[in-house]
Image (cartoon, rainbow, N blue to C red; front, side):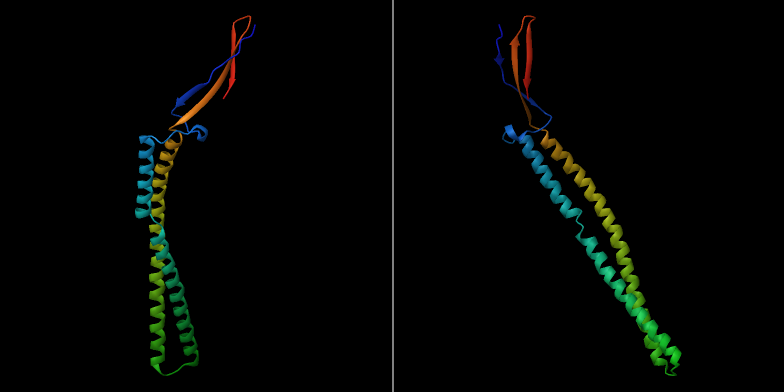
Length: 166
């Protein structure tokens, strides 16, 4: 004679979260959410990428403009040397343009380089924040894991057999 007995066993563990049987958030989960929010705000304040990217963009523009000015005046000066004007005021004005262009290009190159180093340090900071946030999110994901198992116990001639599904 077989006698099926169905039982529902609910196991609560600290391994994960199942949306099918989600529980209301506990104080620990609220604290984890608050810590994640705090880290997100701190990351936005201390490790934003806007400043370095802006410095690099402005520096790139200054580099391009300065190079263009210096090359333009250098071309004009070389053309002036070919024509061989006797008036030195033309040559001095061309030299001034080359110097202004070279200084502008050098400042732009410095801004691009400095912005690149600043960007690299900000990315490293962001990675630290991201690792902390991901760790807390995993902890939150696994904080309220619920498993349901429905075993069926069947009596046999040798004893009892237990089988079921999750």
